Amino acid sequence: MDNTLRTFQAWDYVVFSCLFVVSSGIGIFFAVKERKAPSKEFLVGGRQMTCVPVALSLTASFMSAVTVLGAPSDVYRFGASFLIFGVAYTFVVISTAELFLPIFYRSGITSTYEYLELRFCKLVRIAATIIYMIQTILYTGVVVYAPALALNQVTGFSLWGSIFATGIVCTFYCTLGGLKAVVWSDAFQMVVMVVGFLTVLVQGTTQTGGVRAVWETAQRGDRLDVFDFDPDPLRRHTFWTISIGGTFTWLGIYGVNQSTIQRCISCRTETHARLALYFNLLGLLVILVCAVFSGLIMYAYFENCDPWTEGLVQAPDQLMPYFVMEILGAYPGLPGLFVACAFSGTLSTVAASINALATVTYEDFVSQCCENISNQTAAWISKGLCIVFGVCCTSMAIAASYMGGIVQAALSIHGMCGGPMLGLFSLGILFPCANSKGAVGGLMLGIAVSFWVGIGAFLYPASDLHTHPLALSVQGCPVNTSLPPAHINATMEPFISSSASPAAHGSALAETWYSMSYLYYSAVGFVSTIVAGLIITFLTGSSNPREVRPGLIRPVGDLFCFCSERLRRQCWCGVDHEQDKLDLGNADMTDDKCPDYDSSVKTFNIQDAAYTNSGFVKDAQA
Image (cartoon, rainbow, N blue to C red):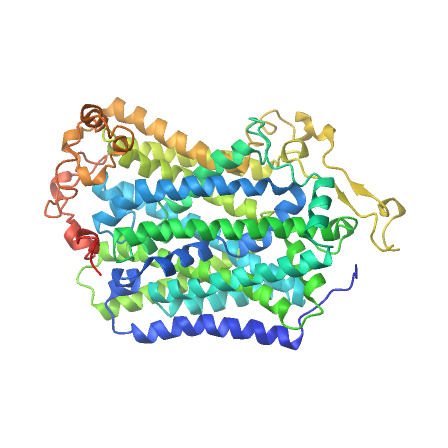
């Protein structure tokens, strides 16, 4: 293995530039084409999208540079248990398609947080919107940092210069406008991601001696111990932490996330929206398998000379781009293809995030404060919001460099914020008795508990006994005279048992509560929100289920009690689901009022806030 830092060649820049120009060209095309469209067209694409491009867009946005760079590194260090995320993805997509999507699609809303005002009150809507904005800015900062890291490793560019350049380009791309541009650009970038992964898989397998050699090497290194059924919640990755904790984490991302739901409700019918989610599941599984096998091939290639231990890379997340330059550096253009794979995926994620941030800000704040805004003014406000959030996300990317592994950092952010948000929406959709006081109290407690464990884990990282990193070797590395003799021919042990002592962090709390798997952050926030919300509801007087609008509640009991009409009605908990799903002419959409909130002055009408939705048209339309 050559220790010399490889850099981009002319053809790499050409390939990278061409792919970026095509992605930007798609955005420019739709920006010009839709320049005279109403502001609602800008936000939801006219609700005429079909399932295939939306499915590709969803996959590209949530499986971008974080997965391209972080997942193979995770497999390299901890083994192929990352593959179990496929179980979590399956549960998440089914739950989103059958539980949450019908509520949002049929209600005709543009911002998912409009639902919270319809179900509870305006205070809940505003609180949830602010939390979502913070969550998305934090997450997008990590996503901007990831490709900058790749560019820094393979081209020698300044890391900070790459971050600012990435932020500027992404902000420009997002400001071009329109959900259609975002969706179709994402679809193209998804294809680029798959091609980039396949290139690495084929060439990496060839250089490591074939599939059998990779498999045998992975077995020797214990990288194929996928199914660990240890129920200990402190263990970083086991079958239970990934399948249960991963389900709650990703359900917060898919089920109630504005970026996801906004693209689903842009589909022309509810059937198209459901199909988009299920096709997206196939895309998620394809990318997941590619990422896991890339990690196994990378381990086989570096079996006897780990570049991280040797000091050839500064962070584990630089392993994948370093590996790409090792195996593809002799082929002009191919390293550029891989970096474009990561960079284009980031563009899709940032475009979707900033578009969603602009949407919720406009719908939940601007349009509520300023009435009778013209379409031209609304368009300029939306573009201005894109620039503002682009600057915020770029600034957060600098902080992301101190957050450790990008996969764990990204999912930790989603867990701490997404869990309580998932609990809040579930409280409204699944529990007709829940009232606004319970919603506010549950959300506050859920956020407090989630951030308590998340920030505690950041300050007191879990010991190796809980994370279980696997052994890495440098026995086959070329002798580096600058290193001490003890380092040469060394092997990093999987973990040192002495670090398991609570004294390592100074308290038993650090070795228990703070050492919880990061995948359980979302579940902790979800359970805290639900339990606190229901307790506060019963203490303050629960809502009368008969007064709750049927279209705001999902009768999940119908899925299990379809054979018995009596049991099915009992599961409705008093809500009359035989009534029309949502009476658009009814202005009084809540059954109770917020603390210090006078329901007599509330004049919110969904017809004024919601865009014309084809979900109320028969699904057989063209």
